[in-house]
Image 1 (cartoon, rainbow, N blue to C red):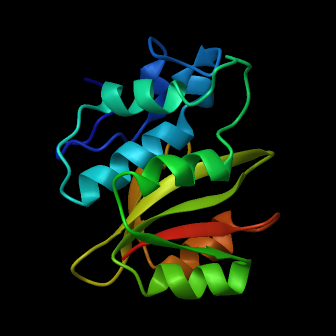
Image 2 (image 1 turned 60 degrees about the horizontal axis):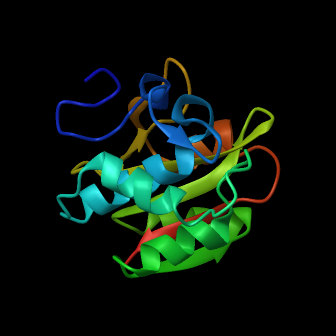
Length: 160
């Protein structure tokens, strides 16, 4: 399926238009469940992507469009993973740069966005589902923070 990498990660949520989430389509509003799926996959959990979407969508009894709140993402992940939550740009960068994998919450333009990152053998990080044209790329964590985390409150969930 378009939107997935060869190793099974979702790298482009634009391919998920057929999957509703919170009263909208996932291409517009699916970054939260996409990040959760990708992090579970990075943890070695073989779960179908649509199972993650359905379970997270069910956490919202009223299907009112809106982004996934951090507390809902954390509640979902608490069922499956151990992680540490860190807020603030400096502390988030330090935690992310010392981790193997995690989810970053930052602003992509004028939109809050969740992405998953994975440490590569050379110490750089692979970033999944970032933005059009840069959905799956590798760079050092400080470079990502310098070019993408330029405004707003930055939060990170790092896998332990």
